[in-house]
Length: 122
Image 1 (cartoon, rainbow, N blue to C red):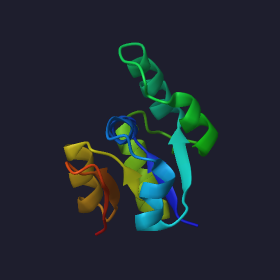
Image 2 (spheres, rainbow, N blue to C red; image 1 turned 60 degrees about the vertical axis):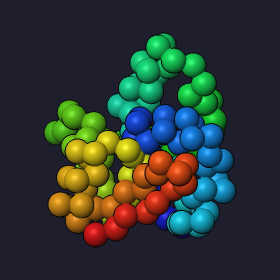
Image 3 (spheres, rainbow, N blue to C red; image 1 turned 120 degrees about the vertical axis):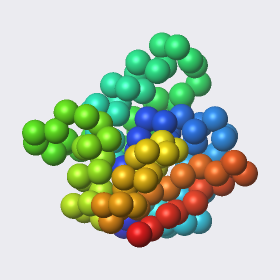
Image 4 (cartoon, helix red, strand yellow; image 1 turned 90 degrees about the vertical axis):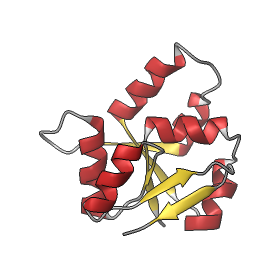
């Protein structure tokens, strides 16, 4: 089973696109295990105070919390390290994070302008 790391902006884009995460993911990676860093969860909780409809209850049910790599403080750095170490793609739409993932041998899943998921591997 493939694991997918969830980034805050990736989750928000998925919700905004009104995609069913299970159906959309099954088309590109099968039935993955969704992994969530505590720091990403905090970012989403903060974002939910400014906007509604982020489906955080659904994310809590579908995902498993994972520990951040030791010594790292920035969310993107944590995602990069976990992706690189474990070969897990990151669900994100953050342009800088996607570039850094590719430059370090990682991969990502993005929500396209046509409201579908696309898997980019290095």
